Image 1 (cartoon, rainbow, N blue to C red):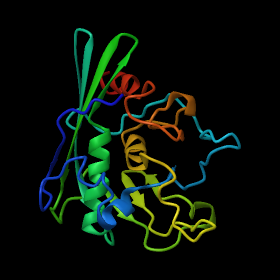
Image 2 (cartoon, rainbow, N blue to C red; image 1 turned 90 degrees about the vertical axis):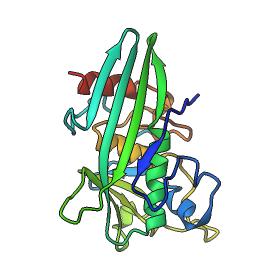
Image 3 (tube, helix red, strand yellow; image 1 turned 90 degrees about the horizontal axis):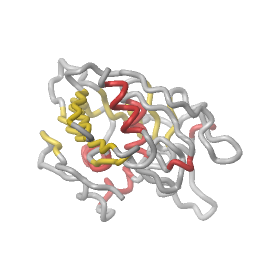
Length: 228
């Protein structure tokens, strides 16, 4: 079960919450309903069993203590993520806001692991300073990706999350955008240093049909890495 904490997203035209686009409103909902994510160059795909091909418990410390802080009090650990995000060229504002909303909604939660409670609170602030590159950016592919990536709607390269509008059509001619949940949150996990997990964990870093941030051990490993 997912327990949502306070959701904070600032500097939009209007303040949004994780539920704004959950009803499927407008083109934004179509955009952020992303299918299975692909990291780096897009060659890390699922194996024949549907598992990610590069499962690892390793966590990379991508950001400093001013961006990701970890505090432990008794049997509770609090992870606070505060990042500035830029809107990439070619990405519609409504799509940008929907993707941010998806990330913030999923990354404000808690999980109980081995009798310990881990809380994560994520705040994303839109960086409108033209001289700044922000902490990361959300981008849109400007053209069709290579053949082996056309069925992927999400990709993470370094500190950039790419969104692909050019998703292949299924046999009925419908865009395959709704086949996988949580891709924006999945790619955000890669952005802050998490690797793929087995599907049985239902981790947000897996390729499971049902996955979320409160499942698996992602928060425990994230806290350990950034807290040391």
